[in-house]
Structure formats: C-alpha cells, structure tokens
Image (cartoon, rainbow, N blue to C red; front, top):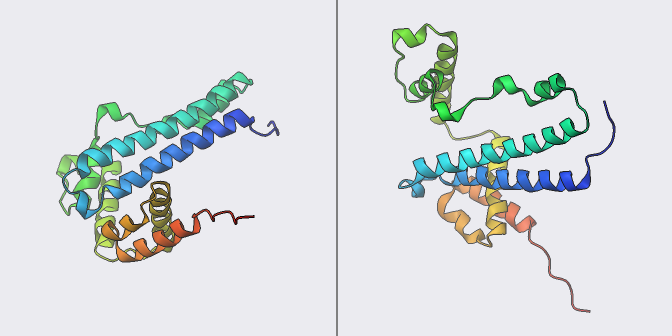
Length: 189
C-alpha cells in the first residue's frame, strides 16, 4: 500500500464536503425538535439525504483519485463497500417498515416475521422504543449532538437560539461548545 499523504487539493475538497455533510446532519437533528412539528418530515428527509449525498460525493472523489493512481478495481470495490449500498430510489424496504413497526410498538404480520432481517430490525426498533422512554444518558451521543448544535450556532452567530429548542442539558453543552469556538479579538497594539 502506498504511504504518501493525500494531495492537498484533494484533502481540502474532502474537508469541504465533510463540513457540508456535518452541517446537514446538524440540521437533521434540529428538525427533530418539537418546535419544528410543522416541517419535520420534509426537512429531516431533505437534510438526511443531502448529508448522505454529500458524503457519497466525498467517497466518489477519493475513489476517482485512487482509480487515477492505479488502485486495482477489486480493491477499490472492497474499500467502497459497494455491497452495502442501499438505493433510496426504491423507497423504504420491508426491513425498514419492520423497524418502524418495532419503534411504534406494533406487531409484524406473519409473512414479514418469516424473514430473519425483518425480525432483527423489528426487535431493534422495540429496544430503541424502550430506550426512548428514558432520558438520553449516553454522554457520547449528548456531546456529539451538542457539538453539532454549538458549531452551527457559532457559524450562524445565533448562540441565544440554543436555549429555545434544545433539551436543557444539550443546550448547556452546546452553549459551552459555541463559546469555546469564539474567536478572541486581537488586542490593539
């Protein structure tokens, strides 16, 4: 395997795409908040697919560079994990509907229960529904969410808005993140 660093123009392009993808992820989280009840369905789908498309662009850009520099096609396919790609154009699949049924506390029809993947996704949904009854306690998840919200608030220069739509513990953390990102003014010389 080659041990040369990523070329700077490619590195910067990837950083730009990842930043854009992260901003879209933050907006997915933002549109799940109660004050967004009128638009959450449309906007969470838009921003989630925007994030997926942006990250796909980053992967394809890297793949094109690897192809250009002579990476073997089978190695490239392996790294791209192409067999895991889900095609959104086909819409939600039976296993997705099984997952939602589990989240909503609904039983699966007998035919759907026959497929192992449907049973697994249904049980996952049931576990997630049970966990949703408890306050979020995973510090890593809370910190990730706070970082995304704090970064967006700092970029938009709207730190005060954090208190209006986030759970208090996330708002406090997000405010701290935003404050840590504040650029200190240069002292007059």
